[in-house]
Amino acid sequence: MGVSGCGKSSLGQATACALAQPLIEGDDFHSAANKAKMTAGTPLTDADRQTWLAELGQQLREHPQGAVLTCSALKLKYREQLRAASPGLRFAFLNITPDEALLRVAARAGEHLFPASLVDSQFAALETPANEAGVLTLDATQPLVQLTTHITDWFRPRADAK
Image (cartoon, rainbow, N blue to C red; front, side):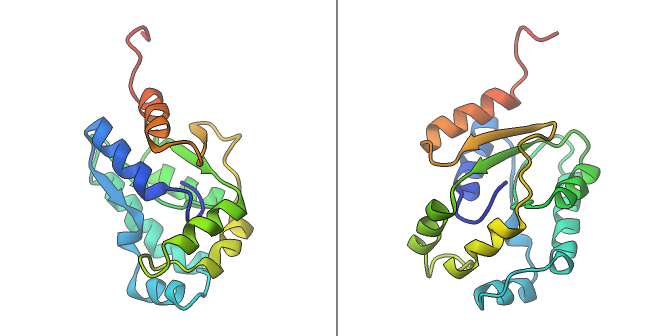
């Protein structure tokens, strides 16, 4: 989870492969209206996100054996809605600076529906999950391999845990 440009999709794909779990790409479940708003540079509202979050919750329920979900989950109430759909859900928070996120989003212009003009709105909406239970905070600028290792180590049960 995290703002646009933090690397959710790349890390989600790598983590899903490493854990042999299905990947639920959150962006794939946005409505056509939400996609049009974002493409036009209009930030989504809480109301815009309600149906999307409900669908993501349903996707999690359809994978009781586990899945990797990529989702911005910017606000506590969004994370709580997802946790209600999937008790025990944990979040890997990809922490990134606004400047770095802007550079990354601008670099993928034309390849992604999210324009760089919306990066500031993501940071304005972000309620950091750093002190919430079940959250691993990661530096999004670390190499993908290192991030994947951190997450897979965190998710895999330890052999010495009883």
